[in-house]
Length: 493
Image 1 (cartoon, one colour):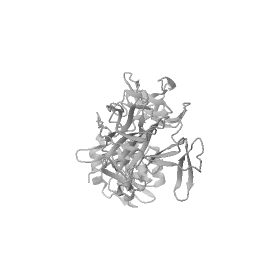
Image 2 (cartoon, rainbow, N blue to C red):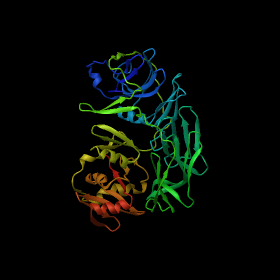
Image 3 (cartoon, rainbow, N blue to C red):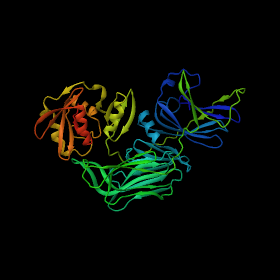
Image 4 (cartoon, rainbow, N blue to C red):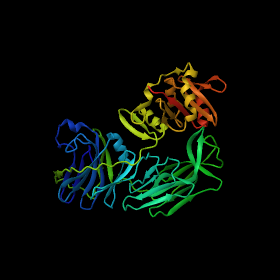
């Protein structure tokens, strides 16, 4: 791959084939300057055959001007390129790229599996029949192994309420189920190598903060291998797991011995897995530093190319296809997602506002609720601001406080935002827009953030009616100890 072009080299014949590119090698067509497509290699066989996809905006051919996924097969022995089918998409290029980075896999069973617009789909490469394996998924509800050969997903019943987890081998098509016990819920956490990590708890045993569900208490963590055999089981009587994160072969947990809610104390624990970590895709790729091009990547061959012999170049003839596959989702996404943008491009899609704000913050960007409602902008915050009439400014919050369960848009257009986990600096953007931020300091106790300058934060205590000015350091100590638990009401424009 180089400059969105796909090349193949036959060392026996000393031939380099320019397998795919929009436009000719010396083209100056303006369409070649539209960098809104990518190429992903799916498989390479022993005869040099390549299955790959081109995704994004199509700059040439039958689908020119459309956005989607084109599936190709290149036969090296015939120097022939065949388009198998085209999948149209309503997602912009950057979002489609982000989705396919999660899952794009050609199974050895002859089925192409991919994630697109909250759904996992499979297309039979012979019959072109498709199946929607799951839909309405956020990235918090499913996981894919590093080599894309296994996927696991929760039922579309809410992130904390799934009774079962479906797990599928994307090479054989074999499907199994985890959980399913009466009165239990299951949570998917990811993969270590090809081993699946999940947790089990009691249905409705929620981790709560002032009427909002922040998680679920789990009783155990399990890891199963490709044969669905247990390779690890973690459980401690009298102890529950309130939070889990996976980093390579380490499982980080927050555990508790009493269910005191979000503001209760917890202990940190780590499990180290012995599962085999699969090699990365770039294991056979070398690189060198170029003064003109920066870092240049190259393929490391098993033998040197004779410099005296000139590599003969060729391009295959393309056989385009009129076949179009249009997967249809069977369920809509239940969760509000936050889109982060920065420096003129899409940066990612997140379930938690705090994750989106952190990503956009580092790129001087902004965050939208859904695709089109801007709710947060880093570069649009004054250096100092003060809400003068807190009674008037807090009316929306007082009106909707009892309805604050999830991120949602109300009938009058007000967006109820759970900004928990954000930094003080990030949520002060709302204060600068005359939107008070409610910061919980415990169960049933709170304060409003009502003003700030570069070194201090002004807070209002609704119970006493008192106003207080805290140094930024003190504010971080107080609100950090409470988990930075923020909510606010973003009015419609």
